[in-house]
Amino acid sequence: MSFILRAFLAIVMAHFVLCYARYRTRHAASMRAQAALKAGVESESSDQQQLLEKIRMLNARIEQLQADMTTALRLALQADMTTALRLAVCEEIKFNARRQALDEALAASKCEIEELKAREQEALAAVESWKTACWQRIARLEREMMVRLPMLSRRHTASSQ
Image (cartoon, rainbow, N blue to C red):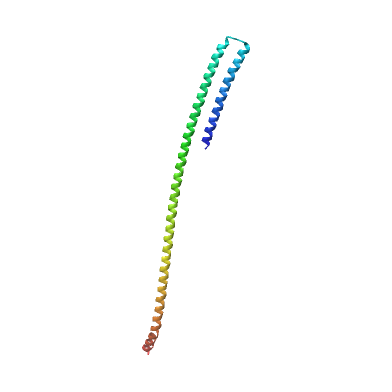
């Protein structure tokens, strides 16, 4: 942005410099013409004509230079704007690629989280199932012990007698 501003200011300054040069040239010529008329010198009229012709040629040359400079600055500004636009488009493409990669990574992370939650639920269900099976086995063993304990105590008392 600052380059565009500098280029614009350069165009404006060049315009003012050329306008001032044209003004000074015209002013000097008119001052000489007035001085010659005041002096009343008749022989200088041909010199004045030549001088006016030179002034016209210089003015035409100044206008041509001004047009050339304006065109050159305009083309340079357009080229810089084009380059800036290309850079902006490249940056936007890079940003979109990064954003897409982050979106994909986020989606993959969400999938992994869902898989981990599912595995956790499966593991909790397996632990509950194992815990239930253990308690059932303990209960079965307790029942068996209750059935066998009186038999063992009868055997023990019978063998001790």
